[in-house]
Each structure stands twice: as C-alpha cells, then as structure tokens.
Length: 217
Ligand code: DX5
Ligand code: ZN
Image (cartoon, rainbow, N blue to C red; front, side):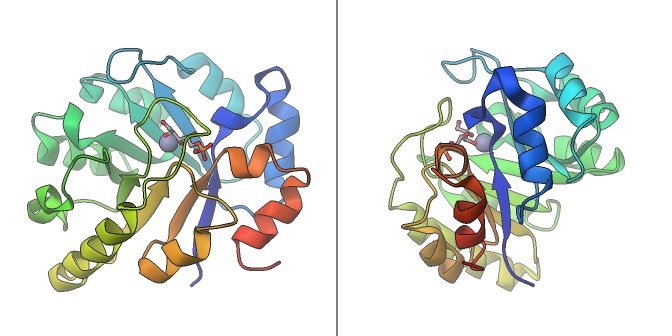
C-alpha cells in the first residue's frame, strides 16, 4: 500500500473550517491531522474539544489527533468519544508511556507516540510492539509553516530498521515542513504517513498539491 497524506487543519482558514474540510473530503488525502496545543507543552494554543466536535461532523475521513499537551491521560476518553481514530501523545509528556498507549488501544483507537526533534528514536525501543504509529517531529512543535529539520531522514531510516527488527509494521508519520520538495525522499526513507499543513492549504491549487504529494501528479 502507498503512503498516506494527512493535511493539518492548523493551516486551514478557521473561519471556513467546513469549506476546507469538504475540500479535503473531496481530495485524494487520507486523514485529517488535528493539532491540539495547550500553551504549556508548546508555546502556542490552537483548538480543543468543542472545535473538534464541530469538525467531526463534517469529516468523512479518519481524524488523526496530535496532542501537544501535558498529562494527556486526563483526556484520552474525551478524544475517543469525539471520534479520534488515531490518538498521538508526546513521549516527552508521558511518565508512564506504556500505560498510556495501552489505554489508547483499549479505547479502540490507534496509539501514536510523537517525538520532538531532540528526542532519540532509541527511546522507543521498548514500546515498539505497543504502538501503532510514531510521529517524528521534523520541526519543533507549536507552529505551522516552519523549516524542515534534515536530521529527520536519519531518524526515519533508523526507526524503520528498529521496527523491522522488532516485527512491528507501525506507521511512521512525519510532521512539520513536509512539502513537494521532500515528500518522496521521506517515503523512500521509510515514512508512510505525511502531515502537510502549509504545503496543502497555502498551495495555489490544494487539490493538485495533494495529488502530487500522493505521487499521483
Ligand atoms: C506543528 C504541528 C504540525 C503543523 C505542521 O506543531 O504538529 O502538524 O501543523 O505544519 P506544516 O506542514 O505547515 O509544517
Ligand atoms: Zn501535528
């Protein structure tokens, strides 16, 4: 199976969320990537539960929720009830990551772990069979439109090897600064989910940008 494309709604027009979601529904993109920020784990605040509840009514594709919040255990069930298909927590925000991942799976969601650019992928070695997705942050989380950190290529290759050795076929998602110039190299390195915020919504022709990043262009 080919790779998945997950446009980040952070780069959409918040005053036209329904319009922008319908554009994604009608496109070749696969998931909605929803970035939840608390102003504590990251230096920005995005949107939370009431907005996601409204968004969920319009989405015909899975919701991939990326929690950039401290102590995410408080809200796992809330996001399950809101309809999240993938729920991703940050390694740096979890004291008991194994427990958190088990709880996410028990709630019927795919369990994701995101790691900041400074966090070595080796820190995931003992939970590779307990997760369904690793989100490699290729920018420091908190904002859209930042520059891609090239070290991510090494991390992607290393993590894919680690997963192969562990017998895991979990997704590797790349988040931040992904666009027309690097999506192919990331897929070649072993990534299979690409988050694309600015490169989708700021494109002159978002449908064409999506097709191109899906390798259909
Ligand atoms: C950053 C978020 C990303 C962001 C990506 O904290 O996790 O999902 O929306 O935006 P772009 O694709 O514009 O770098
Ligand atoms: Zn994200």
